[in-house]
Length: 163
Length: 58
Image (cartoon, rainbow over all chains, first blue to last red; front, side):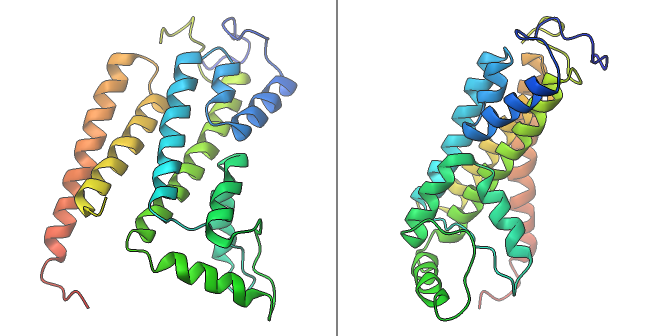
């Protein structure tokens, strides 16, 4: 596999920091869009299918979105994983809390959110759904990093290694 | 779906497909990674489940 940053003949728009950031932004907005933009179209569509399928199964299984809680610092990491899916994150927050919220507020405003979360968790498949939702977000975070690597030439382009 | 095994298998297949596409550029190698990884995940899960069998559920 090529490690030469200058060997990006297959990238349709050239390389550079701007291109890399643009592909990362696209990858966050829609899973696989970064790869699609960089010329890896089949791969991008496949990533879109895999990540969105994982996400939708998670929603269907009553998975819950995490909220960052100051009393439990690790919840910030889980929330970050949820946000990794991009704008689709809105759907899981509406499904769990019926509103757009990312941080657990102080008392007494936290009670309605905790009650909504408990209702969701009571569902038989909620734990599985939550795992699917977190995995979808983490997959998309990896796609963002991979799109960056492709854009700056750290990974071989399709012309160098046929898809 | 309420089948634990079914959900675990679906999860394994999706994750395996993702990493197969992410880590390999040649389709033949991607398929190989996909099958090895999905089989490993499913078999490892069954093995762990078997080891946990003596533990109480409650």
